Image (cartoon, rainbow, N blue to C red; front, side, top):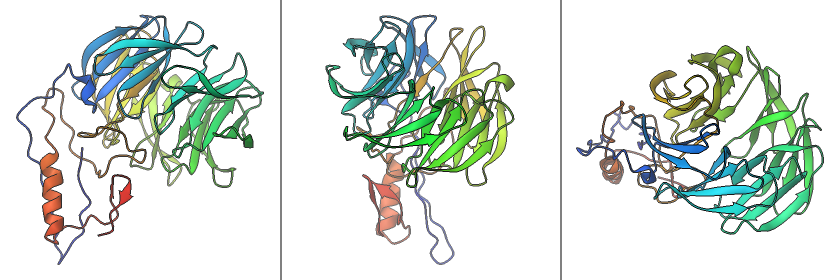
Length: 388
């Protein structure tokens, strides 16, 4: 969904309109990026690949043992799957929608993520009390540190310089140098941290704790508590909506997901579901949200984030858990850590609709900008801000 922020000249606002493509989005091509959703189903022992734009199950990918956690490579070409067999991580190639090999990380993995530059796997192990950086291709340990307090959750700063590790027994988040030069500090909490969500600019960390109805916000420049957000029930998974000051919070006991306004630290409303929400993820432009929902059967709920309404559901096994969504925007070949070049909300395609061809929008905006009728100042392209 690509569009641009126009600036009025002479009281008029000019907008370039995209012309929709006549060809439908190919349901079998998850490798094309936008709308590709992968869901871990431990009961079935597989990862389900879904065309999230149209609500269609495309494939079920068998993995060596029950999938427990997922991590998407920033370039969109691979999904890494933590399996229940100790130390085993399967690598799914998205172009072929199949397991292309496994890595042996040599320990039980509690949480896994790919570094923002796509060069490393980061993992924590509660069993061994370690945090480690692994070679993405071989699984060899590149750096490792022992950490007390039972590490169970993990986040890496957008610039890759810091690692944040949730410590269950110490009830804190440890702040570490990613280059292995030791610890920086700790962020204390009233209960065990379970869910971490990092702001895109790396300045804020949002933490959900075990059996608490509060989200805690930390200022990462000062390494200090910046505030807290009270919710109507104990919290589950959390996720930040891209390009919006909103935090989505699973409320399992209410069968809903709460939407929090981060400017006012207040609950805007709840999205009711057919069962308990397990996981939350967004498309890279923030237009759609995806929730895994428990039940018999379980499901994937597809949500119009702007309207906070469910626009589609996909039936899954009874225990869908973690999920990841393609980090790619239309036309992107690799992920910009700061996000797509230009973005504003666009009308959602309905289930079954073709995906618009957005190249005409980009071309139209460029022509209008060249003619002085549209300003792109302040927008980003290729990671650089447009000055005029």
